[in-house]
Length: 144
Image (spheres, rainbow, N blue to C red):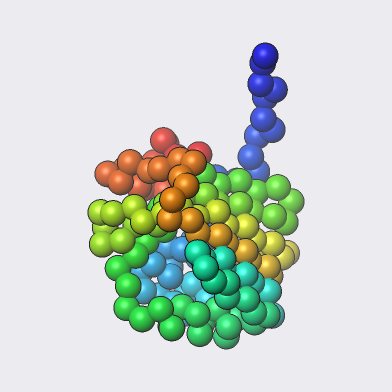
């Protein structure tokens, strides 16, 4: 059985709005990350045992600020965009060393480049692809 060729993705990690969002938020620059969200963004953040949903940028801000100080980063391994929809898959790393789980995020991007819809799911057990933590530069040619 042969696998048909996949269509070429419309984006890569280096030009992903979601990857930029995660990079800004993980660096502690919440304002710059939130600037990528439409003021009326609809969102669902699906975590083990709970879900956070809302319909505006301030709801995302409340969620992020409510987490308290964290040493966490999102390490995207895959990204693609087709039309207005963007998808990112990756690992969540705590303390720079420990992969605590994996995430799958999707976003609707408007004509101004803002995220108008955001859905992300995190699972601490199942991982479809994990990064090599030593090579997490999104500009690296080893990243899709």
